[in-house]
Image (cartoon, rainbow, N blue to C red; front, side, top):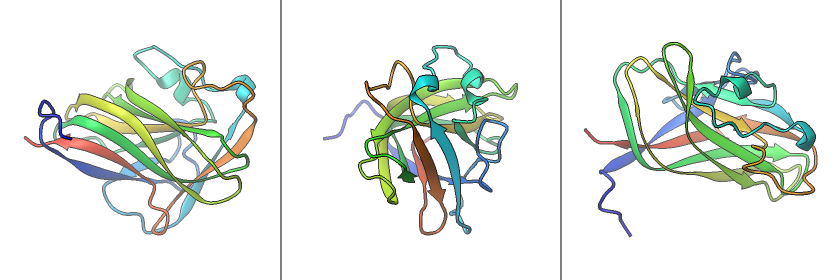
Length: 192
């Protein structure tokens, strides 16, 4: 069923790329409209006792400096990008435990490097030590990424207390990206 209130849009794919060091916003994680040509993976460890905190701050950089947060950032936009609708993250992941959480967070990065929260979501890895294609619903969002801004995706193992379950275990997580594992962010870009 279609919601007539959402503008017409199509999903644009932004692929996750890195040289294996996307940890923190200072890392080498990138979002690209071009499909990946080389395989790589990024690792982050999840510790439920020191998990990434949920932050209501407008600027997300206090959590983006953590080694357990992977950050993938686009180049500066040459024209505005407006989104309206469902945002989805598809990641190829391996985890050391079953039922571990993988979160995705969409962020608008300003020219001053401020990082504004847009939307987020979580999904659980059902099988341990096995490459798994995970679809994460980041919810519906409307946002305008202005010219000169960058689009960022943060990936981690939780957001406490927003996404936490009793009895969670520590985990070693790997996000795979490449020609055979095209991890990607799907943005509903509204037509002009």
